Image (cartoon, rainbow over all chains, first blue to last red; front, side, top):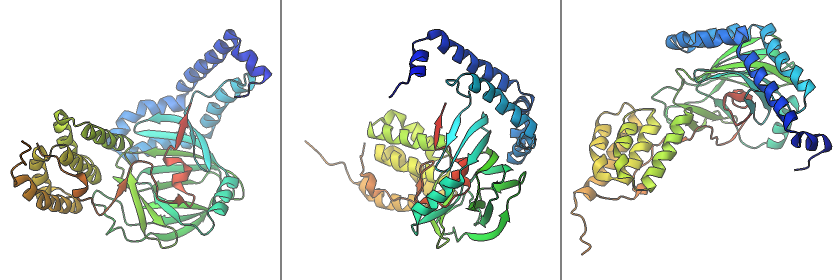
Length: 329
Length: 42
């Protein structure tokens, strides 16, 4: 790391660092006290009870309040102008083509203020050339408000709804549902279970607010190939669930048979793919202990592919499990 | 206790990746707009 003169001074001056920290703490307090953000926090619990629509309706109160968003930015920009080492006390979110700040962050709702770079979008397309690309249906519900449309044109896409019974076989094709020339202030709700958009053309950067709730989300997000419009892949919409899967793999690899009730629990709850993955790990951990749950799964799991896989596994393993254990004496 | 080879246990026909995984690059829409927090700092 190259340390320039000013940074060197700041690193050698504990009082300067303390002033920077104090400014960040003060900014965090001021942001939490902003009426628009405080109203979101206060109303979230009851909106959450009512479901995703109510949560997005609550978020709309902030999305529509440009003065409040501007006030949030001013709280950040003023100390940043005074102190180059000041950092906004908000989570930064960056992706291939966008960067933003999470103005509000709770499990049931996030609101980010972001910029999508026209240059990076163009560069991404140039690099991709004729290579395969996907149209992604996130499985989650979002509300966008474009503060600066960037003169962009969106294409809107639809696909069969991703539900608890989602399967690759029945995923059909996505289809173009229309195009929309964005204007400043446009609000677009995207139900990622069956709708999405693509930025087709953007002469300038887009500045937007995006509220997203995981409430009522689909078990998976789905990627459709942009050329064939057919499904190319799915991935979990549940961050914690994916971490649990990795932990079950670790427990199985460590031979932790004492954790068998955990495996049984996860094989009986959660989204279809996570249930089956938990069962596979359970079988590899202790097949005899897993057998009753496997039989129950084959007989009555709500997802047809899980029932079928459990039935196949039962047939394949029954003979093996009924054989006497080999004698190693 | 019986140990079985996990590769003998069938997988679902519908393969599902972990959260945030993708098979192909996105054309440029909601996903890259930031529903999935790819890199978080601060």
